[in-house]
Amino acid sequence: MDIDEIVLSENHNGTSNDYGITNSSNEHYQYEYPKLFNSKTLLELCYSSAGVPALKSKEDVQPYLRGCKWSPDGTCCLSVVNNDGVHVTELPRDLYSGSVDSKRKIDVLDPVIHVKECGLIYDFCWYPGMNSSIPESCCWITTRQNAPIQMWDAFDGSLRCSYRGFNAVDEMEPAISVTFNNEGNRIIGGYKKVLRTFDVERPGRDYAEHKINSPASCFATSGNLLAVGSWNTTLSLFNVNEIGNYKSIGKMYGHTGGVTHMKFATDGIRLVSGARKDHRLLIWDIRYYKTPLNVLTRAVDTNQRVYFDISPCGKYLVSGGTDGLVKVWDANKVNWHSSLDVTDGDKYNVTYTFPLHKDCCNSVSIHPCRPILATGSGQYHFRDPLAKSQDEEVIDKDKHQDTKVDIDMKYSNETENSLVFWWIGDIDL
Image (cartoon, one colour):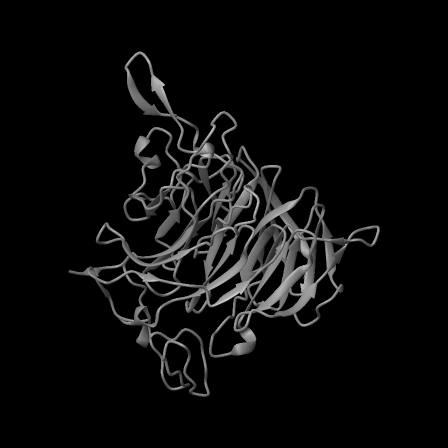
């Protein structure tokens, strides 16, 4: 079924959205999410470089991708680039519907919006009701070093407003993490010792506070549930009512590093979490949250946030890794939904493994309604203090032959800083 038959959002006035879909109160379509990874291969569709440093920049200025997320309506992809701000890249129009041919030429894309921001961007997210046919809904929020939570316009990249949190001595405090609630009428900011809830329609310094015991490093929402990850390796569950009050449900323990990313499955019952310098993805059943439901493995050798994503159909869990591999777990073949049987070694096996990048694959995002996967690559590379030059060779006197220096990956010159779109559906030969 083509995307032309999908109703992405209700519009009883009969207007059309960016996909050319006409909605009316008398028309109802049932959309079946396309099958993914059936061909067991991925086709590169589009490529976008994360940018190159200026000639006068210092050596430690490295513009690598630090996350990418599809917009809720699927028209564009938002990505954060280290030392280069935020990029918005549009999906080519020919990919809005139909399938693709194996001989399709790879598009080289340039960002349509580039917001240059100084300082490290801690977190970012789209407005959940974003629809390109409603300009006022097209926005995202970011939180960065020494700055408040900021809302940006997705059409021209202008700053709409900001939401400022202040500490006990009336100093503006940057949020570590940020998200919208499911309804999109509140913004939740995670700080070192407090959660602050802002009304979207009232920017400024008006907010409600809820004290916590550890920094809120990341969020995941499902209905009235809020999961809060922390750098002290714990996950906390809260029930948030309509007024914005938080009721603690409990804490979950299991990671060996600070929690960097979480996501609820489509059923709203299972929660997936990942941490820095922790090779495990933990699957939790929030009804029995004392121990993990299942454990999956990926490569995370650094403190960098490595994203994962769950397909809208709920069958596929996809994650990147610092080894450049993209791993896919299909619930029909490797039931990552089920409880862990420690006597069954196959529980740790992935369904598919794709070596898509030669550098760290730190971000993956599945398109909300098309079989397209966005991946981002890059990481910080240290300069080897023992090497005189980047292409230095040493002579092995015993073997009398030239061999290149064997160095750690963090000193590697194999850098790749890019945003790539991949076709993960059926391919026309």
